[in-house]
Image 1 (cartoon, one colour):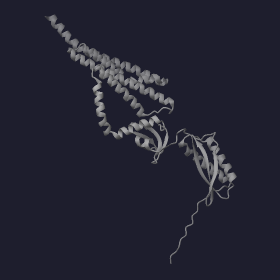
Image 2 (cartoon, rainbow, N blue to C red; image 1 turned 90 degrees about the vertical axis):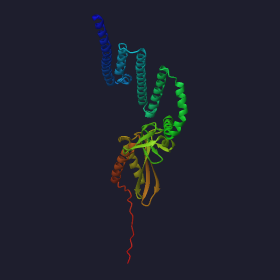
Image 3 (tube, rainbow, N blue to C red; image 1 turned 180 degrees about the horizontal axis):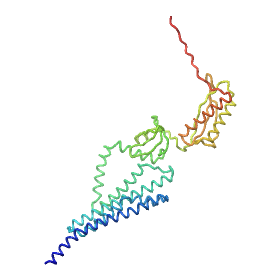
Length: 349
């Protein structure tokens, strides 16, 4: 009798202690492996091992989850549960594991796509809408696999989604319009993040991102412009970065009627060449073009074309050009016209 009671008590202790041991062992093992992978990730980042860095970062915080799931699964073997209950819990743990694997796959794909788009240097759009669509497809396929594993037929679900899709489309006309406009913008490659654009409504700036609903534009004054994708797709847009970022800047100048135009032309072209070669943002091998185009009341107007690397370089180029040209004109007694207005007044007696 005493031996029977001891065996019974020992069995109860085993049923209580062993599950706790399995759970703690799984948690501690996961934390140790997570710590090792964290150090490996840090080392890979320092050595610029990009593929390894992306792969290790994709498993972030999931190793602990997997070890804990394994511990929970082992603990079930020692708990006095009915077969159906144990089977349900085991299946739930397996579903959680499968979904976490889908998360890892989505992270890996996103990481390598981001790496690829970065290396392509603008030839391929690095856009959140594109990344989100890829991840959405992965999660949908993963969910269908999980449902199939659980024995749930996906055909009725797809049928219901097809029927309800019409009502959803009617309710979300604006959202869907912006979504497909965003896809069209990405596919056309006529506007990409990093491009400087100007809309026909006057807004202009650098495109920073294209999301599922909006295109965000950062103006030169550091303000954020948010425009619906449908408006961008239907607007007349000037893209200052297509087909190349280099562009011609036209600078207007006026000199007095008695100026030596040959000397003015020579000085202006020399200053323009000097600025192109020495000021950051200029194109050193570009030959500036100067031409006189009109007479005014007290001056002769001319234009000079200079080339810059990209749009926002024009301000420094103009700044240095005007400073140097003004100094040189003064040294050579070349005058620029001063607008004088005569106002006649009449005294009433």
